Image 1 (tube, one colour):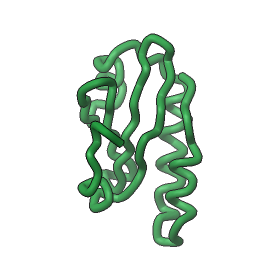
Image 2 (cartoon, one colour):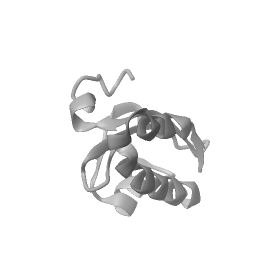
Image 3 (cartoon, one colour):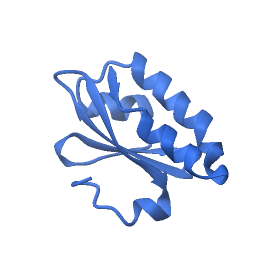
Length: 100
């Protein structure tokens, strides 16, 4: 899979010293996602289990033991993952997942 753009995640953990604990779990997700072959929402669910599959290719991952949320949009035919949001659950509650 191609992933666009890891800088969204990186800018989050660099924004505050308190968020540095997101770095390793987020990079672990990134490395795993690079090697994966996502052909459908079911393939994501089978691989991760604890994800929320939303409409229009949106997927929400829980990162660092459910401390952070990662929202992506997956273009399954082209095997591309677009990172749309990465943040705390409090920040996640303030966004509209379907439009971000």
